[in-house]
Length: 170
Image (cartoon, rainbow, N blue to C red; front, side, top):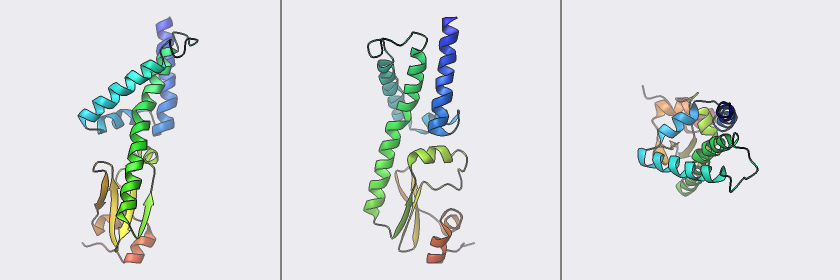
């Protein structure tokens, strides 16, 4: 019965933390699989070690044995995304600042992981215009990527499209 209760607490912990960070229950799984294999394994192992340490009896001796797996689960999910998100946000802000765009919009990594699974083709993490050439931020490349006018008219703010007279090429 204790094992069943511990498993139920784990499911509850996951069911609370995953939607809070990602917007749904399945996105944490997609997020972990998105990372390159070396980075994915490092993040999973390092976050598991830290989560185990946090959930250990040494750190929280008053926590019951049935609640430890739930604390581990919640902490592990948070530790797989929070450091990556803070780092990605910092890198994006720095790169866009150095790019010296004429105009820009930036969205947090944490907003992106909530939006992309639902609006994959239309959601822009961040965008910039420089000399009326449109760019969008790519987390895969960790840089601004020039986009075709056919794409730009679908994803950029209408005032940018009007300002630079961006039109479809076909």
